[in-house]
Image 1 (cartoon, rainbow, N blue to C red):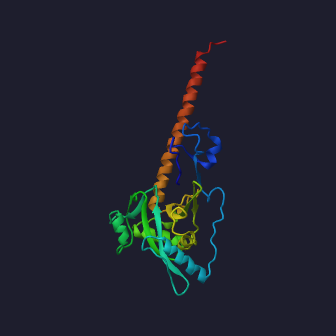
Image 2: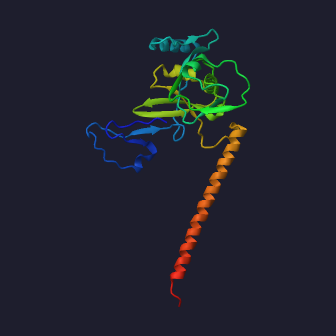
Image 3: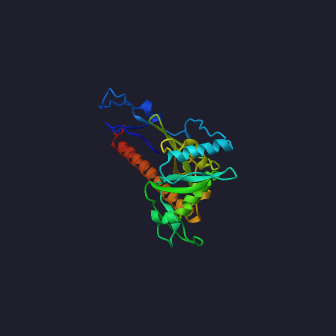
Amino acid sequence: MDTGESEDCKFTCHYRCRALISLDCCGPRDLGWEPALERDTNVDEPVEWETPDLSQAETEQKIKEYNSQINSNLFMSLNKDGSYTGFIKVQLKLVRPVSVPSSKRPPSLQAAQRGPGRGTAVRRRTSFYLPKDAVKHLHVLSRTRAREVIEALLRKFLVVDDPRKFALFERAERHGQVYLRKLSDDEQPLRLRLLAGPSEKALSFVLKENDSGEVNWDAFSMPELHNFLRILQREEEEHLRQILQKYSYCRQKIQEALHACPLG
């Protein structure tokens, strides 16, 4: 999740921790500086994000306004049936490795731009880290859902992990704060892009791990689940060893104290 920093002491603070921190910053006092706060609207306090239903005429006017504000050829186009097409840019901010078929080399960004070739059933996998802050443009329809965007991104990079392991977020900057909200599966990113306009500060899309707090075990393959069981067993054995060692040490000290005490 993105945070802001002070130009003077580089202090960064999550807004829920602000009341717990007392810091005498030596930076300029007359600038009204405050620590940059991180806001995650999906976790702490829901914010009403305006997504009004537009008429055909309003949609056409919005598209004209949108196209007049961009400096590239990534225009939106209105279709005869009232839908529209356009481009969305998604930044990949993944901290964990992804799985690709082991018969294929990890794709470069250039290869990902060309899209996947003909593939066969995935039998073996290998893991690697996607390039940090990789960016991908997708040409989508107004009715394309967030879940379909995630699936398309994974196909572009040949990722064979379950799409449920990932989530699409919208990011916005307001009044010096960063707001991050996880999109539901059925939300339409291109519609949100049209309503927000082309400004990346007003709205941008980020692909991240779907860390909801509860592990969706059904999203993992059998080899991954077996590996988790082995890890849990090792952690349990180590934890038991530490507990036994602790009590053995306490028992030894008590016995030493008893032997040192004079009789009577």
